[in-house]
Amino acid sequence: MINVMIADDEEVIRRGLEKITSRMELDVHVIGSYGNGLEAWEHIEKLSRDEMDLLITDIKMPRMDGFMLIEQVRGHMEDIPIAVLSGFSEFEYARRAIRHGVMDYLLKPIDKTQLYELLKRVEDAKKKNVKEQEEMFSQAADGGEHYVVEQTKSILEREYDQNFELERLAEIVGMNASYLSRLFKIKTGQTITDYLIRIRITKAKELLMEHPDLKNYEIADKVGYSDPVYFNKLFKKMCGMTPKDYKSGCKLPKMQREF
Image (tube, rainbow, N blue to C red; front, side, top):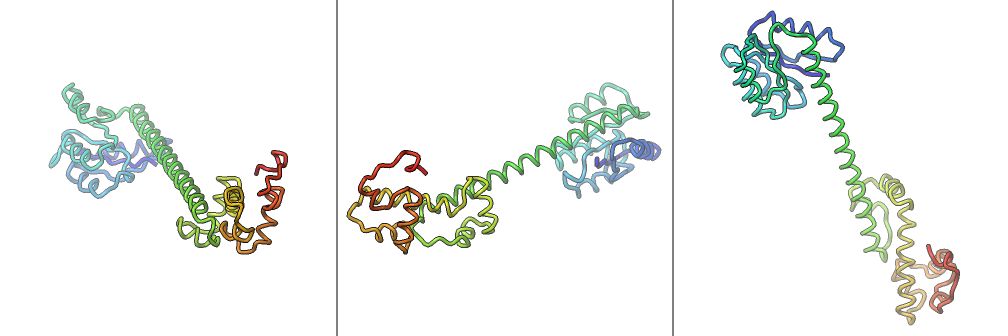
């Protein structure tokens, strides 16, 4: 929908514009029709940018002329499309209108084709703007989700030796626990639990190689497992050998060593 404001001191012109636009295939809504610039401005100053798409204003009007109205509107909505409507074809009016950054200069009587083309340009610009905003919001959402996933990874890598609680993790990153689980799986291709296990087993392998004097239960405890038997089974499942065999330097094919 194109929300249009009309300001012209000739009622027949205002009614004519409303009638013409209502018969066009475009979805045009005249949100205000005023006989002078001041009344139009009193309405416009209460509107936000997304409530008005086009101002069509006459030049010569009582109380506040078109150029003064344009200046007021520009201060309130800098990028609003404006079309000047005038019965004067003198170049000076057109030149002043151009200086005020108007989108079009319409001469009375109104050319329906020119008016249609103006409204179509406004509609196309609005659609383009909406699309760009949607893309920006989408990118911002994607960026936010990426940040949450990276934040989750960072926490897991920092606190791998602590008891894992999904609810606590979700609270830290400011997200619902079930949604965080789904998001992490979508973004990384693995569950949060699997990601944590990989971190823990990697740390365990480092400890086994760098501190061979540590007992199996001590290493298990240092990487977040209170049950050494469970840790032993998990390590064997992930690495293809027990922690003891790994420490002894038992070699296996590369495919079995990598995970």
